[in-house]
Length: 156
Image (cartoon, rainbow, N blue to C red; front, side, top):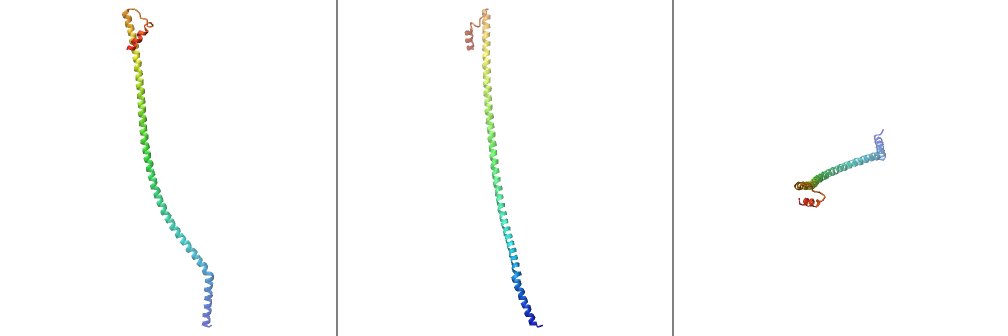
């Protein structure tokens, strides 16, 4: 065996092996590496997007919370204002009702006073007739003296 022939044979075999690897083995490996590289890059980009979206969501949530607190304060202020208004309305309605009851009581008192006066007039007229009857010692006919009694009532 010749050392040169062995070296040339091994070199040709190595060149054929390198060519075979470059033609059939290397492209699938490179494609797999490129696919994996793309997946990793997409994953990192998605992670960055997710992080950015998380920051935006946190900002929006704090803004929504601030807005909700503001609206809650407004609702509470409106409720307190309405409560005060209802209390004022109730006070005015109660005052009106009290005034109405006082007026009704005053009217009732006036009516009772008029009835009492009328009753007293009647009694005074009857007493006057009785007194006149006793003075004259004779009976006075109420039918014939109705005008006289009417004048007496009006004077009293």
